[in-house]
Amino acid sequence: YNKFDLLYLSVNLQKKEDAELVHPFLLRILHGFTTTAYIVKLDNIDKILNTLYNSKEEIDKVYSESDLIKYCICPMIAYQNNMKSDISYVENGYGNYHEKFEFCE
Image (tube, rainbow, N blue to C red):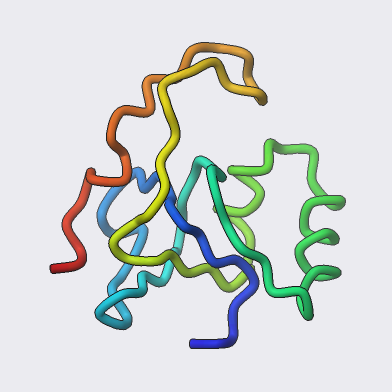
């Protein structure tokens, strides 16, 4: 599991099928939003930056739709408060998205 581009500390999943448990403490992310907290693998920084540079979409959507290798710590260890988005400038009701689906015991 050391082959990754992004390691989310938390991610907003739209549906449970957007992730799968691959290890007792690790989710593989297929699609996810809300880039609250994540770690990048330095060896892959050029790949990540090129993915961003080649898009005009917001960062959440770019990462979600990309072929980047994405994982998330399980259970999620960060969350985002309900506040105005830095991207869309509207109030987002994030709620407890880090508790939306059960994956880990």
